[in-house]
Amino acid sequence: MSHGILGDVRGTLFDMDTFAIHDGPGIRLTVYLKGCPLTCAWCHSPESQSPAAQLVLVRDRCVGCGACVAACPQGVHRVTPGAHTLERSRCRTCGACVAACPGGALTIKGYEATAAEVVARAVRMKPFFAHSGGGVTLTGGEVTMQPAFAHAVLAGCRAEGIHTAIETCGACAWPTLERLADVADLILYDIKLVDEAAHRRWTGRSNRRILENATRLAGRNVQVRVPLIPGITDTEENLGAIVALMRSAGLRSVALLPYNEASAAKYEWLDRPYALTAARQTPAQLEALLAIARRAGLDAELG
Ligand code: SF4
Ligand code: SF4
Image 1 (cartoon, protein in one colour):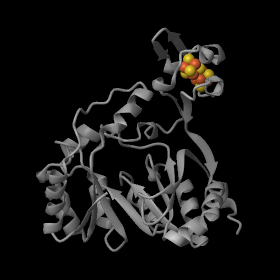
Image 2: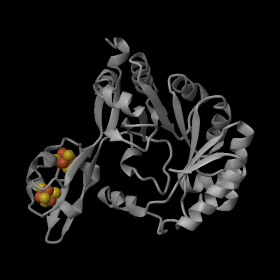
Image 3: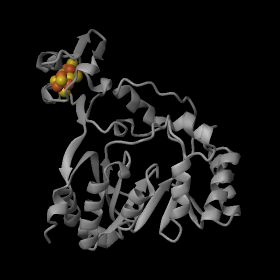
């Protein structure tokens, strides 16, 4: 099937996972879009936040050979015994150092793709989707930051009979979310904090639109997702407020996502500080948090 003009819409991605199993039912093609309006302190994909391409340096893989220093026309790299520093403001993400590195220590996160290319990839995976009940999930970053591209991919997959899902933080104008929700079979909707001051502190933005948009999604196939950040989002008070909001909005399904401190390493790859020092929740703590949602009659699971 041809996907016409819509298929020519271009988007900026930072990854595609062809056998994802945590982003909706079955085996999924998960497409990670660049750019997010929030800057959550615990973000597990800090490379997703900027809409622009970025150079990533995994220092554990660097052997200090200096090939990147010679390859870079901008003088970004400085390699001395035991240290590799970057003057990132000079980087033009040309990729010359990436190509020169023998250790695979360097990558550029961010590349363009057309909606038609993504749909074609999904079509090639149809046998796996059919066998597992899977499909395509658009996530990020934030899917509503690239609404034309996201809509073209979702509509193109729908036309091919492929199950579609979006994961969104909901921090956008309602018409933008509504248009994508209309071509999504499943909406994974992230809610972090109900208290607005706390939301601003930890994500950089108000939660007003997020909470308003949540109430407008009633009647659709929605799973609310709550990242459990120790001492920030995993308090009884916050969970209780999210549960109350869901009940009043008619949303029935929630997944609690246990904290995973492993993402801290990714911040070092971008020369960014990681603000949290918390340890992951114990099984007993997770059971207690699940119980809050289940006592309220919600369909609750650990993600
Ligand atoms: S991507 Fe290009 S400009 Fe940036 S550090 Fe590498 S070689 Fe230099
Ligand atoms: S080319 Fe790669 S391995 Fe060599 S110094 Fe640069 S980052 Fe390290």
